[in-house]
Amino acid sequence: MTTEIKQFKKENLTVRIFTDEASAGKGSADFVAKHLDGAIQAKGHANLILATGASQFAFIEAMKNLSIDWGKITVFHLDEYKDLPETHPASFRKYLKERILDVVKPFQVYYINGDAKEIEREVARYEELLKAATVDVACIGIGENGHIAFNDPEVADFNDPALVKIVQLDNTSRRQQLGEGWFSTLEEVPMEAISLTIPAIMRCKVISCMVPDKRKANAVYNTLNAEISTACPATILRRHPHTVLFLDENSASQLK
Image (cartoon, rainbow, N blue to C red; front, side, top):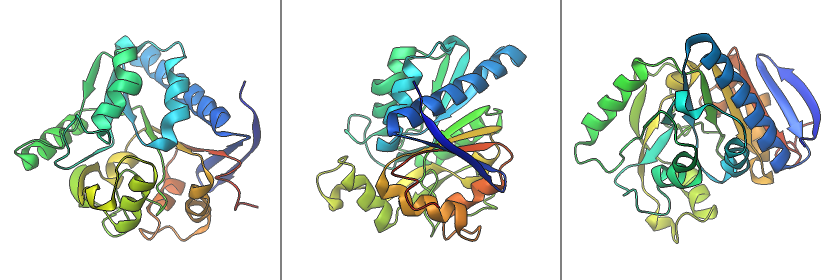
């Protein structure tokens, strides 16, 4: 049972606050499933983008337990570390396969091969896949520095001409990955990643943004209250026509 305690809007952005992370994850999963089903009913299939990271655990777990017609869904993912093999514990391909996709078996999955030998060709390949697709639902999070995907403040571009690009990771982002337990030392955290750009995310029809945990409270506050700018990339979500931000009481703790 989900326990929602508050809902409000900030510009275009709907904010839903739940008592705990599991409830927020279930609320997000129900929302995503509803829109996937709507797309399947309308056109026979749906395109979905999935995020990774510790913030998505409850959402991913809830998604596995819902009645979703995965055989009619094509899945993309948001980002992947450059030069990191899929066998590494921090690989986002490994995360998605083990935590959900090998279980639910979608119609098609397109992975970003971050360790491809010809990485520029891989970026171009993934961009062409996205250009050819209308993404019905994107599931994302927000980083401690306000990033969405791996668009850290220094590399975020609201008018980026690309849909996919190689980005430099800032120290805040790299420390977050270390703090979540994906790497043993900061030196092990890659300096670069392949990421969907902000325009690639904003062109999706519906966005579900799952952001639990007290360490995200400041980023959530800035997302809703700071000037819309790349200083906090997630602020751009306030301009998207259909985005819902799913919070627990911890991540919402700085909101009045």
